[in-house]
Image 1 (cartoon, helix red, strand yellow):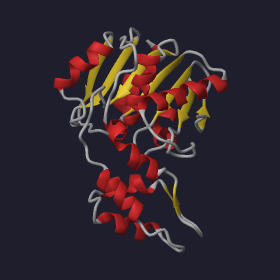
Image 2 (cartoon, rainbow, N blue to C red):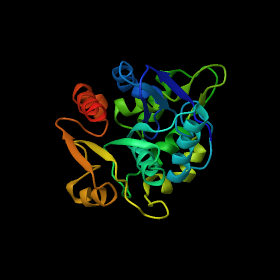
Image 3 (tube, rainbow, N blue to C red):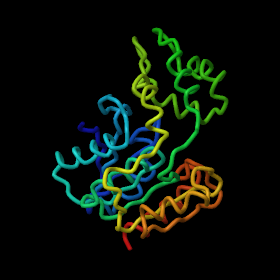
Length: 253
């Protein structure tokens, strides 16, 4: 599958991959920061943004990235992914290490998670997409299930209003693929990625507790794990300057 790309800057290629319910444009703070040094390719993963829809698992999503790079004539890359995009990035590094010169993973580990997104997906699916729908009405409809206003605003970035409102994200495909999205399976062969890797985690997040660090080091023996003080799961939104500095040092050193 060929993915939609937002390109900026000039230099060595740096690929950015977003998380669940996100899109390439959500990583704009990173794209802008790195476009002075790198040729930044921020990709919409399948079922997100303006990319095609289809069943999701990390092998397929990593293959999408590889296929898109091949179409663009790009070989080895620096690669950075957040959450679901971080899992996709890990899968690409493990399955196609020839493509990944350096790997940065933001606030996720190569383990299964038990976060429950079913209610969020169902609330989005149940939103009446009628003509004349306003963003305020959509926000109010989601509020019964999604209590946090910032999360509702994040989700509503995917809502396209107009004569026939629609969701950009492939909600049916995401719902059907949720077990695969939350899980983790190593690619066939099970060889570790020997390149340099940075796992950048939010100190206030529960996604990468110390207990999962051995799972990281088994697969990424040359990894460094850093925690960003005061940042939760969306660490690039919570502490953009610290995250940009850490990634810049990692990718340029």
